[in-house]
Amino acid sequence: MKAAVIDRYGAPEVLRYADVDKPVITPDRLLVKVYASSINPIDWKIRQGLLKFLTGSKFPLILGFDVAGEVVEVSSQSSRFKVGDAIYARLDQLAGGAYAEYALVSEKVAAAKPSNMTYAEAAAVPLAAMTALQAFRDEGHLEVGQRVLINGASGGVGTYAVQIAKVLGAAEVVGVCSARNADLVKRLGGDSVIDYTQRDFTQDPTKYDIVFDVVGNRSFEECKRVLHPNGYYITTQPYPANYFQSFLTWFLPGQKYKVILLKSSADDLTFLKEQIEAGRVCSIVDRTYPLSEAAAAHRYAETDRTVGKVVITVAE
Image (tube, rainbow, N blue to C red; front, side, top):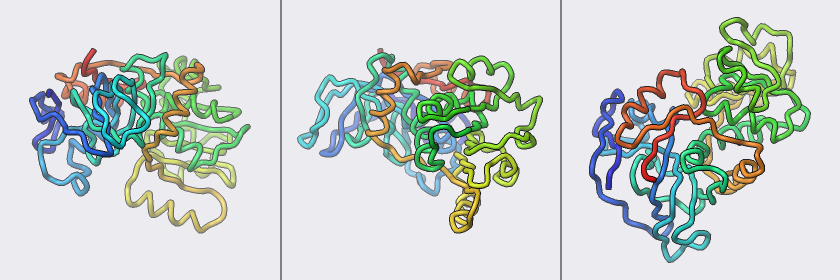
């Protein structure tokens, strides 16, 4: 089968389009024909070698965590899916494996694809939307009527975060992004937008129940002044220093510092499917690239100028 692989860590150019062995089904997995995947920051961090303490030095590696495709083979232990089912998932393998024509997917992390989405739109959902959902629901304990600020509201996680905050009952959602993306954020459900090039949200008098720092470019100390006394600051940046600071606030009264560490979940994908089919959540796809151009896709995604998600199409 064809796949985009790396034989060493480095710049986008280390990604090459190659022939590799088709995966062999195991008792706890589905074999899925991949129609689309998408790019997330963890993909290029793995490619750069920033996580090699986890991924090791055994090559080639197939990157990518988001999968949307069709089940082509099931094991004897499969009970939820059959051949021909359209599914989407966030892979739970260490380095991914989605940038390929076929991928092994655990039943416990897969869900039926939203019926009103293309495979490309569905492939954008799993990692980014589940990150937003788990950040608000599990880390920030978002309650109906609360006020939320999302720093990076027009990005991959941010576009879902705006919508999901509203789904969970936020009374006010404020997005931080550039002026050129303000209309998009408002269309997705944002009540107002702060242009970060013109205004520093950490200096505003407004207080928030949750500050979700998707970009990770503001510190807990900076955001404290715009948080309610028992508010939550949530970051997507899983660095040791952040975990340490989060640990300290766990034992202290008042404001909390949380680091979102995504857990793949079929239940969460099913919940998102329901919201998507009800018209409450949608995907914003900036660009699509064929699998053979994965290096170019990474190069563009790393510019930090993307709006929504960058998708890799694998098959029709």
